[in-house]
Length: 213
Image 1 (cartoon, one colour):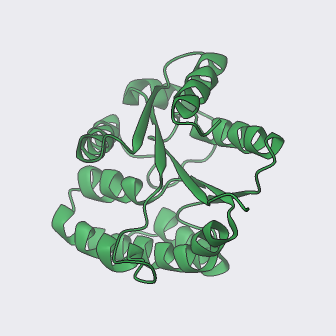
Image 2 (cartoon, rainbow, N blue to C red):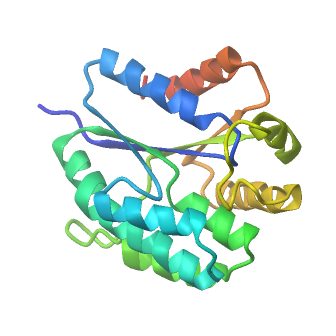
């Protein structure tokens, strides 16, 4: 009997360290015999990667930005996430819809009601029952914006989001906190202001408590 598919997203402001730990989790799950799909948003398909380049580098208003994010997400869900879950794979996604609410909603000040409407349109899974495709677990790497800024300083040429001021990231962090409050059972909050090994230990412990490791 094949295992059920599992969808885990990794969230946090830029510099929180999520990318390091998503690779470690993929290795741990593969060691358990699970097939793992590593993917990201925006991106994950040829079309979504083209939209990613536009969103991260081109100036545009908040509505255009949100529409492109959800267009990329729709293709990603249909072409990658749903087929992988149907096969019984584990999908590990570097950002998903929580990031749109945090960055475009809280950070850019865009209408959360419009984002919720787009979320329902794009992530509806009517084949089984009308419901939203959401991760079973969202690992949120919670880190103070000023700490994240120090980590990012000089690391690479920043995209248009990474180059935003600290007050933007303070709003983004508050947006993540609001998403956690709205769906606390889904979120695994991790204190990212620790040495790498301690953060990884916290991720593992939280997933073991949920029976996933």
